[in-house]
Image 1: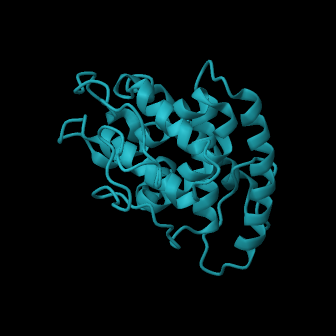
Image 2: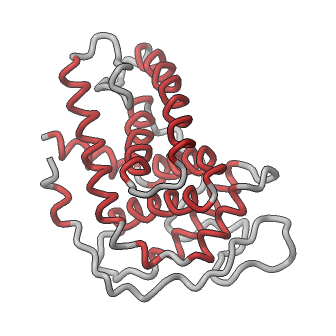
Length: 245
């Protein structure tokens, strides 16, 4: 494991932290925060719309990837919230396993939680896939440590405020996240792999927002998983499969 991620070398010489003082939510005044795309406009190349392309296996894989990434970050301020989220995912894993059992086209390989496995799937295959995803998450967390300088406190605080706003819909939160990531990806050189950068930044932003406001962890987690499945589904599939080969 790990051979695919050996070329994940990001230059520390990004253009500096994003100059963003806040994220403006819909209906909150006639202006928007510096650098924030206008609401109603999806940032170029990113989508906030829910995709129907994610299978139960994809949902489990992405959930495990994001959850393991958050667990791998040292000195997290949301350990208690992560433990509660883990219990929720355990129940979700069971429900997805039931769905997968009725999906004739699904290639079933394990689950996010080692003691929730699909019937008819070899235990060794399930453990292998789970460990591959966890290993990828650990490596991404290590790389993410070198990228934190590109995310300024103002952006994190702005997103945390929006994720705390109960009047915002799930789509509104995805638009906030998409706008922030659009801003951040512009700080990296054009020759850096866009999908690699976007995957790392998406999970790194989730981690920093959850650390800033642990109470919003569940909203941040679910929005992040949906965003990845919408914008990076094929990439995550290939990443896991290549690591397993």
